[in-house]
Structures are given as C-alpha cells and as structure tokens.
Image (cartoon, rainbow, N blue to C red; front, side, top):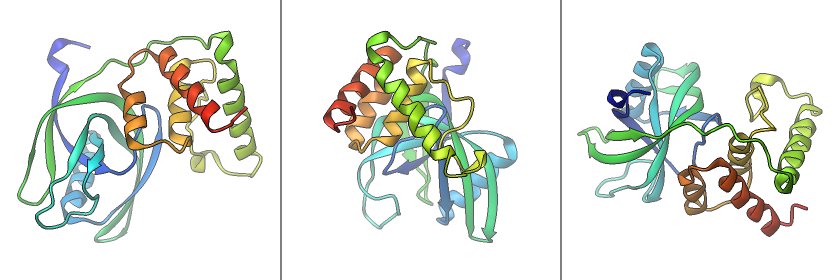
Length: 209
C-alpha cells in the first residue's frame, strides 16, 4: 500500500456492534442520512466505515452527540436490496481497519471522517497452545452447516481460514458476548497471534473448554 493511499475521507456508520475484517454484517437502512450514502457506495463500489459507539445512540436524536471508538473497519456492500423506497437491506463484508484522525458532522447528521488505514493481518499459523480455539470454531461452523443453512446465509464467508490466527480470532470476537471496549481492544491489537491469545482468555472466562 502506497503512502498516498493510507489516509482517506469516508462516511461513517456508527453502530453498537463492531465489524471485524472479513466479517459479515447485515444492516437495515432507514435513516435519511444513510439512504443516499449506502446507495452511492453500492453504485460506486466504494466503502463506508463502521465505527463502534462509545457513548450515544445509533438513531439520531436532537442535541445528542455520539462518541465513537477510535478504531473502525471499512465495510464493502456485497448485497443491496431496496425493500421499500426508504428501507434498504444490505449485507457488508469487513475490509481494512482504520484509525479515526478527525471527524465532522454534516447538517443531515452524517459523520464524515479522515481515517488512516491500518495494515492487513500478517498470515500467522495457529500455535499449538491455541489449537483449541481453531478446533472449536471448526465445530461451530460444522454445526451451523448441519442445520442446512445456505452459504449465503452463513455468518462466516468462505474460505474458512481455520489455520490463520487473525481469521480465527476475528470470528470468535464476533461470536463471544464481549463488551464494546473488549472488542475495540481486540480490533486494536495488530499482532494476530496476540489477538488470538486474548480470545483464548475470553473463551476460558466463558467456560468454553
């Protein structure tokens, strides 16, 4: 990635949840500030940013400022369905992570941000001591498949990279009942092996053994 592409100006979609790279997220779009944004992104093939809310509400309310976590993830629209003129359903896939450098709120409430893109995870094999997390995730995926769910409806997109620290850690981060701050800590961790190690600790806390 060249230095010129490290910084971008993108629209943000604040959410109470966190999108991780390669994660799948379905969204119903009904607020005016997002309808045009989503339509434009889908038409252009461009991304918008998912930023986790630290304080405030997803739905715009008068005189309420929304505080965002500093690290977010680019979202690329895979499927777009206009259910009604003012109601869209989209399915997104997480792309690169980013740091929010500065942001402004437009008159319609849309947040535009200057962001610095973070590097993609290095491909790191699962160390022996963390094999449990990958093996258990594999069992979860097989259990979902055995329910007859189609590939399009799966919560994870193929290929299932069960031999990579970053991919396994990110999928567990989506599945586990973590707080927004805990998810932000995982998203911030640039070493995928250390991220998976943190996930392993969360699995222990949840009694997944």
